[in-house]
Amino acid sequence: MFRHSWRSAIVVVAAMASVCSAQSLREEAENADLLIGTAVRPSQLSETAYASTLARQYNMVEPEDALKWWVLRPDRATYDFRQGDKVVRFAEAHGMKVRGHCLVWDHYHPDWLAQGHFTTKQLTRLLHEHITRVMKHYAGQVFAWDVINEALDENGSVRNSIWYNQPGIGLSRQGTAYIEQVFRWAHKADPRALLFYNEAEGEGLNRKSDAIYAMVKDFRRRRVPIDGVGLQMHVPNLDTDVPAITANIARLTALGVQVHITELDVSLPVDSNGLVHAEDLTRQAEVYRGIVRACLNSAGCTAIQTWGFTDKYSWIGSHSHGARGQALPFDRAYQPKAAYRAVLEELSAGRPPAH
Ligand code: 9MR
Image 1: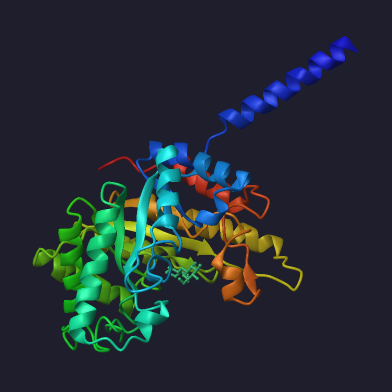
Image 2: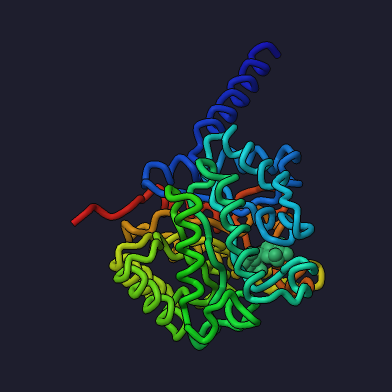
């Protein structure tokens, strides 16, 4: 009896030691000189499993919504920093960096802004003031900002928006001139922050990524203050063209800017019981592996971030009306999936030796 309980104690201690010494994404990423992050929702930080997984596995966070106009600006006169501050406090307590998202977007504006019928002069003041006030509030706390999000359409043309041409901030029909203007304001507001252009569906080689490349090349040549490109990487299918992503990262970093993978998730079709095919989880892991490898193989790719980390909380379910899901590295019970193990393995393998 005595011997038996000793044996069980040894088993328990061994199991605990293996959990404690098991690698985390964060440890492996730090060895590879990479930031590994996730979008977070401040309301979940009080959930123990959410907070402990987050702090153990990641060294970077980005508020998923807390820094958008519709949260920060309930009315024209108010800046409500409470949710963003909560994320920053969590990050500081756990030695994590904070990415900011996003200062300029043409979607999800509060009604007072979307329906305000503001003049060009008013919009110019509003946007300049917003960028300045928000960036100054988080100066020294947010190290990198998505200054502008999704400003180009699938043909690579500048999207219609209140900031561009409806009626815009005075630079309509001048292509990327208004984007340049917001980068200049952002640099003035916090000269130490890294400034990113963030975009969807421009990860591989297509008209949109060609347009991003041309814009960044032009901005670099004329010393417009841009430090990086965020490739969102919401992957909706399992036959992702990883070589095209690798080539796009290579041409962008050759311009001297960083690349961050900013919103990675790989969604799967789910049945009416919320279940996926087992083989899809294996293929999903390989997509994650390929994307992480594409980043690690480029010294200028300095961060990989997923759009959430647990299948319990993801935009995919509501966005697809339940048709897709299970897009993230941890399942709904915070257990690591095959995708997690693939990411961990690639991070452990690290970057190729410099040549
Ligand atoms: O995941 C975000 C969701 O919670 C919000 O309702 C939505 C609108 O603000 O934005 C989602 O995040 C988007 C991100 O900000 C930009 N790229 C696409 C993301 C998914 O739609």
